[in-house]
Length: 385
Image (tube, rainbow, N blue to C red):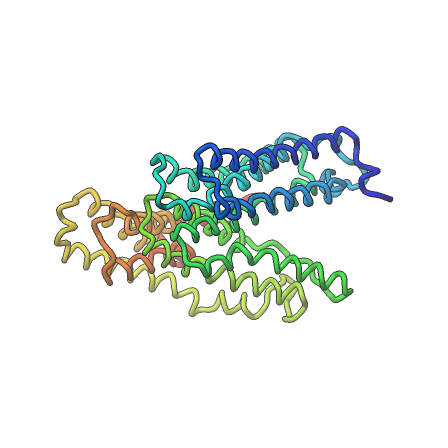
């Protein structure tokens, strides 16, 4: 049966209203450049990715309209998109708006309000934070749908890709980081091709660490888009953060395409290596490195001592990360302190090594013999029924 024939009329009208909203967001960006007399050919071409996003989101909405049913209840479509899906659609509109900042590097000689330099980061922060809201409302209203689940994934993937493009265009992240934004698309294309060719596939089980890695990428790009981070450090963080994510995508592809053997818990050799004694000792070595670097900084403060607030924050962050008291948070705080444009620490060898150790520690957690690791319970959702 034709999928469109079974979609309720009201739902179909809401979908086209959503498409009109997304189109209006792109038209608004074009109008803004036109009204500022900046709309030349090169600027217009830089706005084309935003239009491509509109068509892509439209295809996802229309093509998956028949999935607007509660999870596990495919026989009954909901007559409206619901509040949660509309929040996701607002996020998609934010992604289209974010693509409107791609022409900014072309206009580097133009004068614009200082607030404009903050807008890409603020828009993406809004898109990322709203990701927490749509799922919460869907669960609260008992309207978790297959369509909503699909749209949420698409909004996340397109948002990360678009934000990465803008950050790379502005010189805040290295060009190779584009692989992070693109990784999702060849992955799902490969699954689609294998299914079409009747090749064996294994349904991928969710991994908490994969969710954590995705969250770190969104946080990195959001912060990199704000004019408060030294590009020297955001480029280092990009390499550190992207490596485990891309390895994770490779691992997932090998698993779903049946290219590696897995046990009953869908764990493969790479997972077992990640839990090996060598990898378990890595966080402890990083903590020792952070403490050693912190002591070195205190012993040879020099110019830093003329900034007591920075020195105090630096010392406390090193101590907390070193002993494992809210270690991930302390490591992230240290990353922000060192990477800030206003940091007195500079870009020497010691702060660079400390930055790298802290960024890696934020990814791995402080591991064994941590004094207080509350974040692990939250991130891995331990203790929940």
